[in-house]
Length: 138
Image 1 (spheres, rainbow, N blue to C red):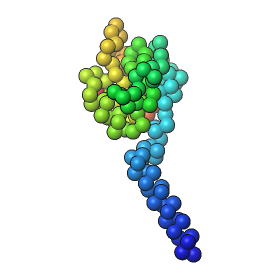
Image 2: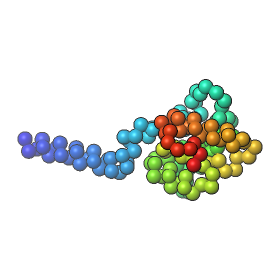
Image 3: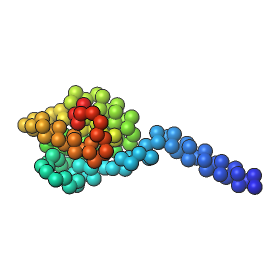
């Protein structure tokens, strides 16, 4: 019986270590939601606020930006991070952007785009993420 108790204890320690390393991110419903799912392939009623999407993961994610996925649209560049802390750190360094959980929108460099379209794109993303607190653009 002691052996069985040790096995259960080892499993509990292992699960605890996994949650600590992941920052409990795996328990958050939005953790696995990709930019493709939340923005690019999402079907909204109303205007398309993610026009001309291009995947830029290979060129955007790396040493400078520790993201796991990135897309560029006419309205914003989108970056998805493995942790909310990583997303927050990146978002805090932006001059013009918004964050919803693991995804950050960067509006800088997007010329000829109406600011209300960027606001609407941010609201759509936050709606997908069940993030209704506060303004849509920080």
